Amino acid sequence: MTLSAGTDAVRQSLASFRQEREADWKAFEALLARVEKRAPRALSEDELLSLPLLYRSALSSLSVARATSLDSALIAYLEALCLRGYFYLYGARRSLRTRIGDFFLHDWPAAIRDLWREVWTSVGLTVIGAIAGYWLVAADKRWYDAIIAPSLAGGRNPDSSAETLRSVLYGGGDHFLSGFAAYLFTHNTQVSILAFALGFAFAVPSVLIILMNGCMLGAIFQIYAAKGLGFELGGWLSIHGTTELFAIAIAGAAGMRIGTSIAFPGELTRMAAAARAGRVAATAMIGVTVMLLFAGLLEGIGRQTITSDLARYSIGGGMLALWICYFYLFRMVRHGDR
Image (cartoon, rainbow, N blue to C red):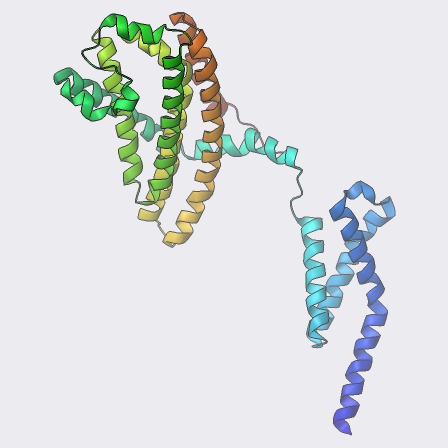
């Protein structure tokens, strides 16, 4: 009899608890459903003002339910309802347009500034690789075939005549040049992905890939410079190269950040350090994709149709100045920041 009486008392308490407060829960749930499917403007002014009141009422109900060990299903329902209310009232609610705007105005430049040491290390490695490649081919032209894959060389080698090399630079939109440009873009995209993806191995593969990419650049430059066409090749490459090489440097920097974070995690665990570095690196890599798309447009259109050396250098230099100003000089803020 005592057990039965106790059970009846609990049931009565639960029924009374529901009867007193369930109307508020249902009202809160209905309002959340409306604003989640549409927007805050779907509610009237009174309904918007009632949202925080109903949220606090739901929290109070949850507190009582937990303290008195009421029905576990009811506790789970109230927890889910309060969580929805919390994310709506206090969570970040941004439209897709706002998120895209924040990425370009704040997140991407901030990630590149955070990676400044790795970025300029990557740029330095590219320069070192280019000098090494130039010097090796100048010392022994057999190094050219060891450095440059036949598919990338496109038939050009240290024995090519000046006329043959010049025809590539000023050949306009012929089939070979367009095909070579497409191949070069694909190659540099692959280099960017590998430099980032292999960075987890303590950054060693990223460093080697960036060095090798610079070495290839130096080897190609040497055969043109030897025929008196170094200035012309620089213009031909600069239209898209300043954007593309900068993108590769950033990709290498992102890989280095992850690799060095794993190698030297500091007070964090290796997994925690890698996760923290990965957030910055991933943001930078999304931007690298944008840069490579820009480079592809410049390569596919500008470099094939513009044959003036001055115009080529102007476009390449202008793009480099634009990226540097965007990343390092303009300090734009996130939407809603003070």
